[in-house]
Image (cartoon, rainbow, N blue to C red):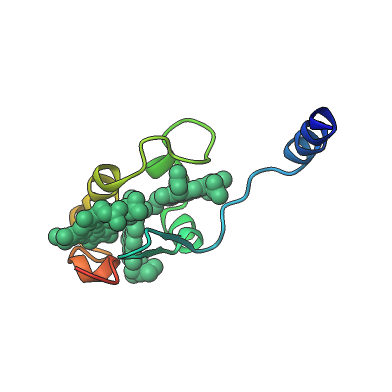
Length: 91
Ligand code: HEC
Ligand code: HEC
Ligand code: HEC
C-alpha cells in the first residue's frame, strides 16, 4: 500500500514542476504577505533570492534570511518597505 502511494506521489512530482503561488504568506502571529509573482516580474529573474540553484524552497529561509535579503534589497534600492509594519501585520 505504501509503495503504491509513493509511486503515485513520485509520478505527480515528476510530471508537475513545482510552482510558487503568486502570493506567499509567512508566519502565523505576525504575518508577512509576499507578492512572489510581482517580485519575479520586477526583478526579472530568480537568482536574487534563490541563488544559482534551481528555484524552489529556500533552506535558510527565516527571520535572519528575510531581514538580510528582503530588507537589504529594499533599503539598498530605496524601493519596497523597510519599516516593520510595511511587511508585518504586527510589530
Ligand atoms: C524577491 C525574492 C524572490 C524572487 C526574485 C523569486 N523568488 Fe521564488 N521564492 C521566494 C521565497 C521567499 C520563497 C519561499 C521560500 C520558502 O518558503 O522556503 C520562494 C519560493 C519559490 C518556490 C517554491 C514554492 C513552494 O511552494 O515551495 C518556487 C518553485 C519558486 N520560488 C520559483 C521561483 C522562480 C522560478 C523565480 C524566478 C522566475 C523566483 N522564484 C523568484 C523568493 C523569491
Ligand atoms: C532584490 C530586491 C528585492 C528583494 C530581495 C525583495 N524585494 Fe520586496 N520589493 C522590491 C521592490 C523593488 C519593490 C517595489 C515594487 C514596486 O513598488 O513596484 C518591493 C516591494 C515590496 C512590498 C510592497 C509591495 C508589494 O508587492 O506588496 C512588500 C510587502 C515586499 N516587497 C516584501 C518583500 C519580502 C517579504 C521579501 C523577501 C521574501 C522581499 N520583498 C524581497 C525588491 C525586492
Ligand atoms: C521587507 C520585509 C520585512 C521587514 C521590513 C521586516 N520584516 Fe520581520 N520578517 C520578514 C519575513 C519575511 C520574516 C520571516 C517570516 C517567517 O519565517 O515566518 C520575518 C521574521 C520576523 C520575526 C520572526 C518571527 C516570525 O514570525 O517568524 C520577527 C520577530 C520579526 N520579523 C520582526 C521584525 C521587526 C521588529 C521589524 C522592524 C524593525 C521587521 N521584522 C521588519 C519580513 C520583514
